Length: 234
Length: 330
Image (cartoon, rainbow over all chains, first blue to last red; front, top):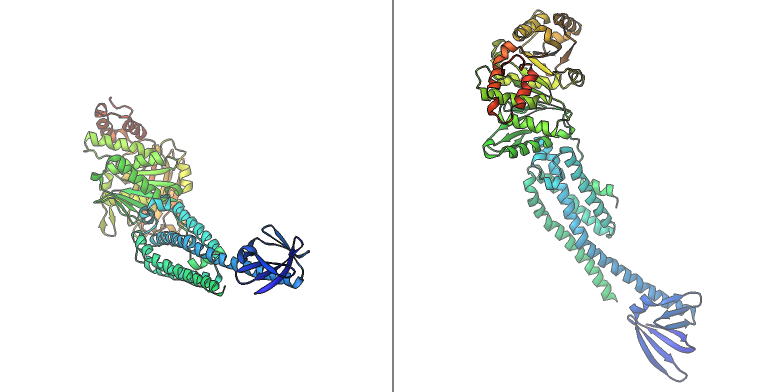
């Protein structure tokens, strides 16, 4: 808790700053009275600081701070709150990103990759004619063996591009955990594909969903606990 | 994180899918051999090892055709330059394949190999076979095998085993893929008004057995050309594979060109070398028309049923193509 002396409309005020509020006290000659109570977070978000003349505008008030040290202290407090807010917003965004976009994209990447790799695997096993004949047309969009290859590859790369953009918005340590899960899943799929045809793909994907859910769930838990820790500190 | 890094982690393999430049299709004859794929009547409709199996009884003609067209797409026909088809004319699957090819891929020149209807065939079957031949001729080159010649034992023995007529026709297809679908050969063939060839195929030909190539060629000529006019031959292709004669290429060429001198109206000739070392020789004679006396029965049978058929035009056109329509009583 600290106090800052200020003036507004030629009247003297004291801003008493604690962890959550600013108490505005009017200072008279022989007494003082509490005029209002500002929410500190709201103040941090909406107050505008003018470093040249040490003035702060907030909700119709224009406070002039007399002491430079007090002005800087108040400004630092506000900056700190804004920084924490920003970090919390980022964490919440990350949860949103993980639970909606990344989760969906991971499944799409695994789906596209399974079809693509199984197609190539079937070409090696039984030749390109059987491989394309048995591949469902809604997956390849064509029955031409080369066009099917290009379509499946383009779809996988498109999904990987979207996923890489989404991963860039995730904290590096959590991204690493996701990449590790991707690597493990891909290796597992490659092993399964060796003995399976297209008809096995839905089963492989169903078995993959829990590991996506678990990894995302753990990361969300981690982020939630970080947010909880911050709230507790505040 | 860069896309390339994620691609490395996810492991996106790359592959080059090689579709043959020339594809052969054998209808109800043999299973796949290299670039020659098979279409066969089967217990169920499926594709296995590139071969198409069709349960004919279960499907209507249009449904079979759509299965065939799907198979063509899967074969990568879009990227194929030329095609060769062999089968028995009048066979339903052969008919549907020929019509599907001429409807969907008329821009891709090709070869149709088949036997002429045998002399004891019924008029209706002869008519049907000639109707199918019409679609075959639209592919480009037509290789016609005299059914009687297929029963000639001299052409039949390979490694001590008898070849069935079906095998001989299939072997001709394999040879045609190399010989006729060769770019230079096809370019020459395109210049003929009537791209009609009759073949002679001989197995187990070896320089150890025959004293010289001329002996082989004379035998081939004897087997095939007894009924044909030598002056009708405009172009000859000699296909030679693994016989030992290839070792002395100059002598081979000299013997071949020496022999071709007997064809007074010959415009050109070519030697095409096989790559499988199969000890066989095939000689393809381009003829203007079939000898009318020998094949008079085909024209007569065909014309005898024309008034009972909705659309006799394809069969009539085939008779014209074979040179059998003139001088035949209508």
